Length: 154
Image (cartoon, rainbow, N blue to C red):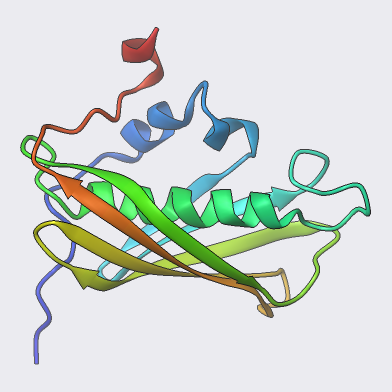
């Protein structure tokens, strides 16, 4: 059985890179690493930008990472000339501490409707151990996307 693609049109990687400039995404070092047929993948460093005072990955950084991947995935999954997505709700279960290296996240759709989307994001450490699992609900607004590159936000 052939599954239809989840992405709407192509977005060149340099557009995704440009969108992160001057935002929290850049501050935290979040990068999109792959847009696969059924998922979006990214990574985030575990360093002074993303850890809490005890030296472990901050739960808030994990949530920001998860919402970033879900939002970018939602952005890629709609007709951007007609729709924009925004976060409505997010939850996260923090399962394992991480003190160094990188965490990798994979966002997959749970539900893609006309007014809402739900994405599951699984975050793992460098040893492929599950660190956090998150679910993010996005509202689909019937307005052209307002995600802009750094040069357009200036």
